[in-house]
Length: 94
Image (cartoon, rainbow, N blue to C red; front, side):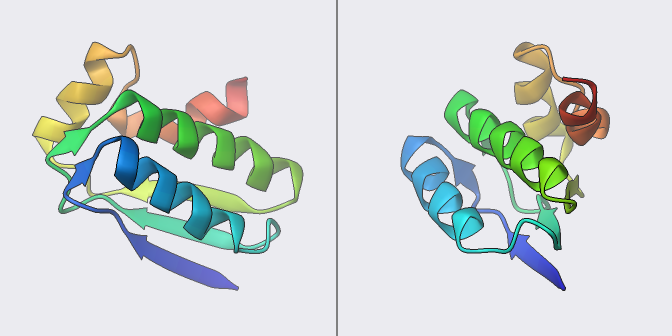
């Protein structure tokens, strides 16, 4: 099963909680695509949610990938030491 989640424009604390709840409802052996095309702010809590979900899905035989992050959102990730292009590779390496 493949599921696409369109990420909110502002991935702040409140959005991270909503995203965590949405991801927790999905089977861990499926494929999830996080569409980041609308993201203008990628906060640390949202990053933590995505990385944690990535590990959960990886251990369950599934995958999560984040696609189409705008440069502005990628720069927020870069400030936290994460390459937006390689976001989910961080999960595989951990």
